Image 1 (spheres, rainbow, N blue to C red):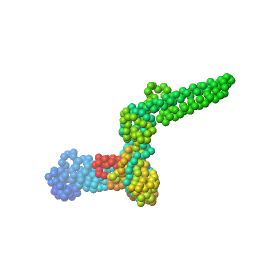
Image 2 (tube, helix red, strand yellow; image 1 turned 90 degrees about the vertical axis):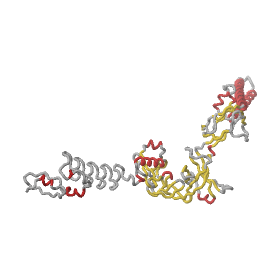
Image 3 (cartoon, rainbow, N blue to C red; image 1 turned 90 degrees about the horizontal axis):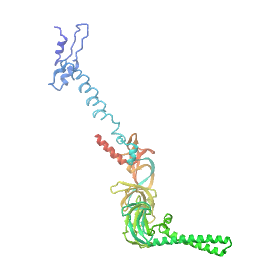
Length: 482
């Protein structure tokens, strides 16, 4: 009996599917869908209770053939045991790719496509902190070029923060009188020339009166001299009278200049002199105590209604003003280390926790050893405009001492641990990225860079910790651990 095409297809259920199709006509018939895949179906199929659509012809008209045939759904890729899972998606974990558009999965090469290569690899993670130049400037991010500098051994010594003696003023009255008004108190910030207190002074009133009288006498003497010189030219008066008038004028002029000098000595300038004659009653007795420098009132000993005396060495100081925008750090140098400390040596001031809070250089070493402590003093002048340091504070001074070698160095605060690797931040397109470096000696607030950074390269010298914090924040938000 001849086998028809449909009969042959039915016999392939559960048996090998090697089928020979007789050529009953000249027209080529459509080949059967079940070939070697049907033979393998009993070994690959994991679900015996599923519909037998794969071993028949079709389960639903219009739907593509299932996973054990050729297609599961029209337009979809082959399944996990075939070639593809979903059309448009990359091959799965047992194939090549997991999702189209993403990088290869954990069993392949990459975790996520679209991330920069080496995002978790080179250059301290390769991540970028995106900041515009304007935002970076507002955040205090500063760039410098890597340069060579002297770096010796590290020596840690105790230091005390002190006021700069050139930026400190004790204010006392220049005239005796009674304090009539107080305009500032302790903790107030004042500018140069600001009024601190008003003193009512009989002494000042007397000095101004003397100057007014002397000025008047000088004017009268000048007029008398001019009149006599005119008469002498007409032969009406004698030359002796003219000479007498000249002497009187010179005397009056001298007395006026002396009275003016006394007023200048108590703080009256030329602009104030012009207002004396036109001053209202009582105003000439007002003496204003002004600030000789800009700074902060750290002490006020004056009280309202108190009598103060000028020119008395035993008189108390009424106000103490200090400018702490610049301070001194006096380092106690033991006598055996004095020869190792040199002027210009880098110095880093550290807190008890070891954090660098300021950097500068040795300004000078006092050539005197204290008889009690047996130490010399190395003084460091520090810019304290951010008010980080407080006079009276004790810190640790880390000095670079000994024979210093020229090395590529960066500030210690510029080196941050990124993914457990020392790194510096460098500018890139759109922001800043960490660059892994190899460090060497650390001294005086500087770190030697052996590899990773070249001389002349730009790096973030100030603000690296801020960038690291932002990088970790971004990484946490993306679900990546760094």
